[in-house]
Image (cartoon, rainbow, N blue to C red; front, side):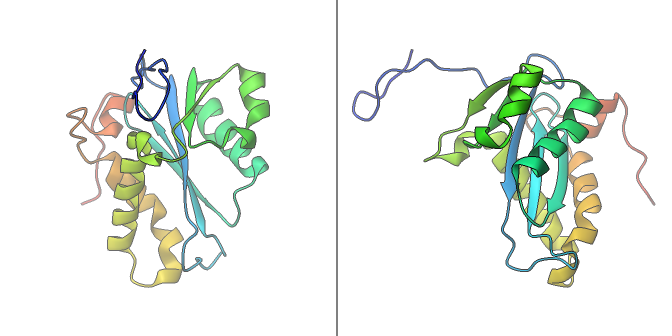
Length: 177
């Protein structure tokens, strides 16, 4: 139990550490971009796996319940299995049906303090930085997403001392010359 006597009643603390690979994912949305890409996409849906720091991303015109459900089903559940826990910034309503269908435990980061989900916020910041460095024109950022993602996955994370790629696949990636 923990509580800040002045500001909040005591509440139970929850560990944000994943017990094994693919057991805990965090999801967030980067957007709305000031300049939509040539496809009209303005949002990037980001999911990060807490154990290996593996990131999955996709860009969309709008973030709807169907978009989030399809992303979670196709990019997380069908590729890595059903996660035990999913952490979002208070967007449980976007995927209620999947939580119930797959028995996924949902945790919110604080509404008033999204930095609480620091793993996702750090990934967002690094992805934005990678995209910004790679884009020459504002409308072509969607074309650089795969390269920004590759840069993120093949960079050593200080929290793990390894690359997300090596932790997920058990070997280092062969990079283009």
